[in-house]
Length: 404
Image 1 (cartoon, rainbow, N blue to C red):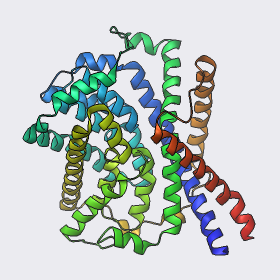
Image 2 (image 1 turned 60 degrees about the vertical axis):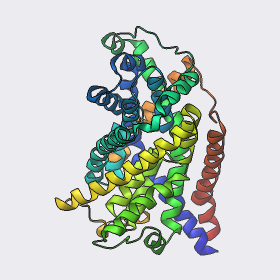
Image 3 (image 1 turned 180 degrees about the vertical axis):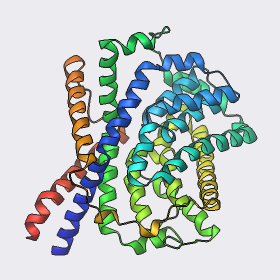
Image 4 (image 1 turned 90 degrees about the vertical axis):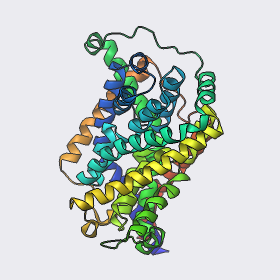
């Protein structure tokens, strides 16, 4: 019993410590993302993007890069762009870029995993788009695009955005513009706080309770200095399969990826796991609601092939240039010293203060919405989040008292 209580405390400390490490990075990423989303409106994107071709795909990629990293927000915006006439590949490019090429994701990856994974994330995001483009061209989406667009238009309904978006130069100099930034910043946190809480809690539990032998069994070849190709391929497939049944978004996946890295999973397996935020079960259900099940399953299949292919290409390209990260010397996340006086402390205090100001500003000007969210998935996630907070509170406070 004492050993369980000690491990419970270790798990809770690890979860809290991982979040403490990442807090300023979340704040910085969402501040930048909020500013871009306010000053570059969705309506402006629609007016700029064309139907198909390299220019449309390039613009879809760029607009995804400057958009929100929240998978569910990206899904809604993608549906809107597709319903308003953007090409299918350009819309998928937007979706992939908005969940793999965004600034805040790169910052979080740098904090937990290092520069090789940041480079892999951005190069891999581009590879995902290119491979997806090729697969759609080769298959023609099996003739599903027209019906999917009709269904997306039915789901889209009325677009409330102005057809004449305000000039960004005027907006950035106005109080109203920054009020919108504060609202967007709070909304960004509102969309991911449940995913982040569950993600960091699960990462701490796995890091403390799950032995390394489990990862070596699940991810075949984990811990080996030079795994064979079939082992690297197997890890690249296991990553998205393991992620499929989770409710954790791209930002919540990163601390869990750090746990996999510290347990010897190969670069390809970790990258495939990180890329898997769009092949999880809740996303599949939403895609089916927007476009119908045939198109949703088609997109799932294309994304799975693309992410496994991108992970393998990255792994062997990095190996060829001698840039594969060496995970053998990486400390277990439970052995890290999370709480100390360093730059993390001062950056976190700064962004906590900024977040408090933005939270107050939104509260007095617009109020707050329903924290639970809409739909069965959000309600389930809210329950899991409440359980996570109880677990963390128990591990931080109760477990050490009982063990003493």
